[in-house]
Length: 310
Image 1 (spheres, one colour):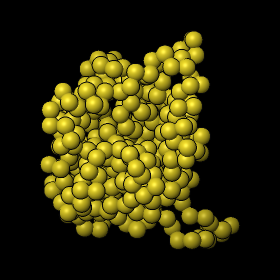
Image 2: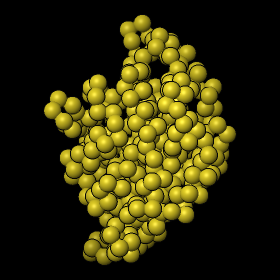
Image 3: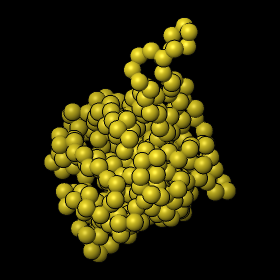
Image 4: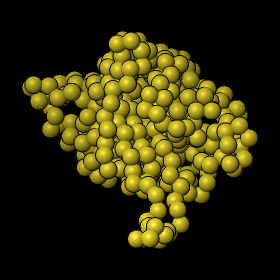
């Protein structure tokens, strides 16, 4: 499988890093061209979006498994993150969702399934709400229902409680050890992908790639977002995948899941009961398998306008 890396300009002077994998497609055939093996599988295109202060490498092993199953898979580093450009503006939801649309169009993705984790899940829900004709569906991984203002009615309280820890100057080895201690069930691939959230400085200490100012701009935008206002009008199929492990992600997920399930016209809700917030890092193959299962069962083969199988 070939991985193609490309920078996509989303506004003058601002490029976002992307990568694309084309998986093997088509049925096995005999020497005379006749079909052999299992029935033809359905292949879709996915665009993967990471969470706050994260990067696209957290999706690596989910993407590789999806590609192995024959799907076309792309991912992006949001502005300010990973190896994308880091302007001091554009961290509102309108611009971040516009970036997703621009990347999808620039990569020539035909109505992809948008999959996002945490912040990324809220973003893909917003993008699909605004542009349902452009996407075949969404997969929200421990997100898409995050409403921080429910837990923190005042922004100042949210800013105080949710500001990122000060990790600048932490030794690289210490950072790796901290991650392994915090996530003992993660594969090493998840630890190393998370380390890509940081620059490694000449003195072997780390510094977050997402600056504190930009982090707080995004956090404010997330605090202002009301995904529940979108549920009843969402015109694409929505798969929600939640982590059930203790301390995993945003509060009140059970209630939020029920609200989404009751309001969205075409919805599936699944739980990884032992997982923490970063399901894609902890259980990448299992998550890809779940995505693929929904594709093969026809969940994402629903017409966006009529919600009838096409």
